[in-house]
Each structure stands twice: as C-alpha cells, then as structure tokens.
Image (cartoon, rainbow, N blue to C red; front, side, top):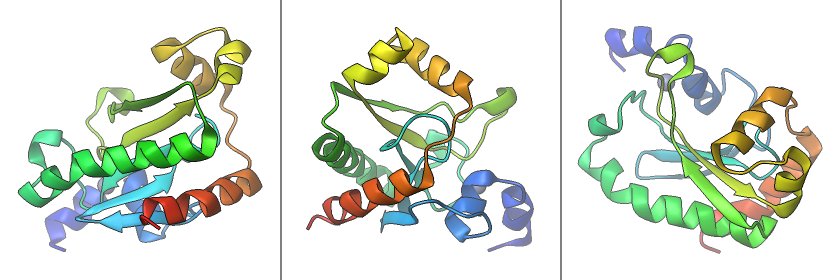
Amino acid sequence: MSAAERVARSGCIACELSSGVRPLPGGRLHESAGWVVEHCVGPLGVGTLVVKPLRHVLHVADLDETESAALGPLLRRTAAAVTEVVRPEQVYVCLWSHAGGKPGHIHFVVQPITKADMTRFGASGPELQRAMSGTGRLPDEAAVAAVCARLRPLLAGR
Ligand SMILES: [Zn+2]
C-alpha cells in the first residue's frame, strides 16, 4: 500500500471493518476477486449484507476489470443467500456511499425486506430504509452471528 493510499484509507469505516481495526459482528462472510461480503453494521436489520471492494474505491467508475467482472455474479449470489435464509418479500440492492454529501468507500447494501419490516414501519423502498435508519437501533450481535453462520456456506457455494 502506498503512502497516499494509507492517508486516503485512514478514518474510513469500511477499510477499518475489513482490516480488523474495528470489530465486525459476524466476521467476514466471503472474499473473492477483490470483493468482501460482511454483515451490515448499521440499523438496516438482521440479514442485511454489505458487498464492497477490499480496495479503498470511492466511485463505481474506478473499479478495475477484475472487480467489475465479478460484481454481477457476486451480487446475485449474495441476494440468493439472503433470500434462502431470510425468505423476504424483496431484496433491495443499493449503493449510496455518500454520507454527509462526500464520496465514501463504495459498498452495495443487500437488504432482505420482509412483510414484517413493511408492517412495522408502514413503508417500503427508500422510505422504509430511511425509517429503519432513523431508529438508530443496531442489530443484535447474537442474531447477527446466527444468521452469518447460515449465510457463510451459501456464499461459499457449498
Ligand atoms: Zn476505505
């Protein structure tokens, strides 16, 4: 890693989670072709995963050829895994990476949405994500560990 990249990565929560500087409930779920899959640390519910490049990449346009080629299959595999484990109505796949209006380390959120989520918050789509985020309630660590134990073999293709 160059000195410039070290400076760019410092203070990046995504880099700190994937490098082990910050604790990551559930641990790393999968790694391939420059991508990692982790459980989301934010208030988006148990079973919500994050797919992000290991490199500190701020824009989708900056992904390299290997990362780009692997992205579609990995998002499909990740969505299939949460579908099998959570049995949701829909799986949202989105990327904002723009906290405070500043480009951040890109990460696709792969979020299984159940009828219970929609009923509880009386919303769907971006309104549901906003409502869930607004609670500030982080997922229970034991529940995260349990769902990750079920997701890990599916993500590995076993
Ligand atoms: Zn980063």
